[in-house]
Length: 319
Ligand code: NCD
Image (cartoon, rainbow, N blue to C red):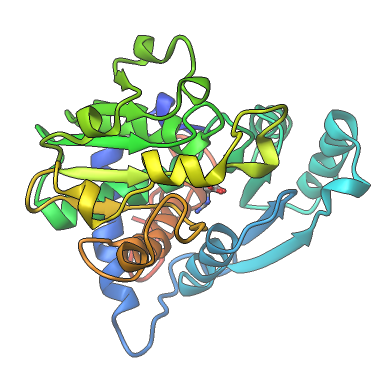
């Protein structure tokens, strides 16, 4: 069950995912109380180590830690002032000396959270590494779909856009497939990785074919910061062909929902209308993000080693 770190959904099995989703349902309930705080992680220290910008992920990890009564430290890690591998590992060693209980890492380079995990004994949670993985985003997407549809098994999900540069796509492909969903991806040919079908997905360049009869349409942000060269000659053309609006959505199931991990380039990947209104569920995803991050922090930082007693979810007492 759930290893020491959470580096990617590739490493999780179905039972792990179900456990995280069940725990997150309980965490959602805590979030609806007037006093949104339980003593569960009292006395634990969690560090947010963000080397790349973030709004939703960073603030929701902070809120999640605080709702569980942990001390949360936001390490100001401007990527420009740090030279990759060596100084990151030095940073990690220094953090280790402070007896942390969990470290949440985001970095523009794939593999950095793993490098840090190799040095630290505290659990490391990947909050997005380059174009590799963003596991808590995929978990909150699963929670959102399961709450909307009552299940994940047997559903069809279409992920649209810049698949090549998207850690969200990769984590979602692994996670949805493990839970029994069919995953399709679509985008301009230069944004579809050559070997994407080896991940067990069907790839399309036609949006219409990709979303035909699907239960979930997930639009991805155009990753301007990761585009080198001429991946996208014209934003207007991209939006006309792959931007999701009510008209294009007609090809999906009548009750299909529309998702986006944010930040949305309004009017590019997603119409204004679907960004703000159902069947768009963008802010539900954000809400579920807090519950998922509480669940992950509880399950990983509640104990330091395999065999340590588990903490009771509400009281923090060992059991
Ligand atoms: C995503 C990310 O940073 O990977 N945002 C997020 O965490 N919600 C997606 C993106 O930046 O496009």
